[in-house]
Amino acid sequence: MRDAVTSLIKNYDSTGRYLDRDALDTLKSYFASGTERVQAAAVINANAASIVKQAGAQLFEDIPELIRPGGNAYTTRRYAACLRDMDYYLRYASYALVAGNMDVLDERVLQGLRETYNSLGVPIGPTVVGIQIMKGIVKEQVEAAGVGDAAFVDQPFDYMTRELGEKDL
Ligand SMILES: CCC1=C(C)/C(=C/C2=NC(=C\c3[nH]c(/C=C4\NC(=O)[C@H](C)[C@H]4CC)c(C)c3CCC(=O)O)/C(CCC(=O)O)=C2C)NC1=O
Image 1 (cartoon, protein in one colour):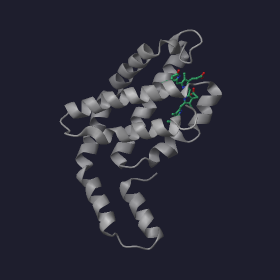
Image 2 (image 1 turned 135 degrees about the vertical axis):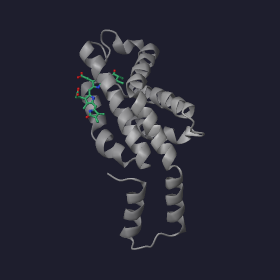
Image 3 (image 1 turned 135 degrees about the horizontal axis):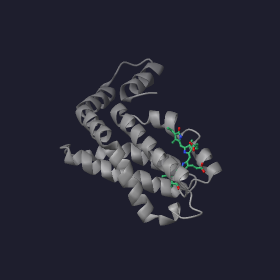
Image 4 (image 1 turned 90 degrees about the horizontal axis):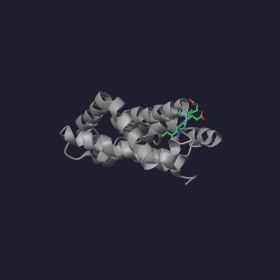
């Protein structure tokens, strides 16, 4: 699992280079945005349960077939599994935000997920809708917490969307 710093060092070390201007600029911007990344993680931590609940309600309102007979989130067990998955996406997004790197998502969340979803008939399109709804809620809350430009919050949610959606949509 890597963060912005370790991935940069790995890259330079593999070619035996000192940290040049580009590397230093990358590091500066990572450290400059550090406080805001931590703030975003704090907002997510303080509101995780309600973010998942709100996003789930929105998702099932947008795509009600999911919770009707024949829908993948129909039955209490599958409904709960769906919200649990949303909670996973949110928690790992908070890690990736702090790390400033998406590696943790590849390693812990996305690896093998498409295959699992396909074999269980979990629909990828609606999952991605759920991830995007959470992105919107988190961004709003991070901005409300006083972070001027919360655009960086998009990154892990969009990354999961892209990686999950890539081949199946
Ligand atoms: C931390 C990394 C991690 C992830 C991401 C993860 C996902 C994950 N989601 C699963 C199931 C599931 N996932 C869903 C999710 C949904 N169904 C829908 O219709 C919605 C679109 C969506 C919610 C947004 C459902 C309903 C199941 C249960 C499917 C079944 O057992 O039939 C399963 C199968 C095993 C199980 O039920 O626990 C895994 C492994 N597990 C992990 O360890």
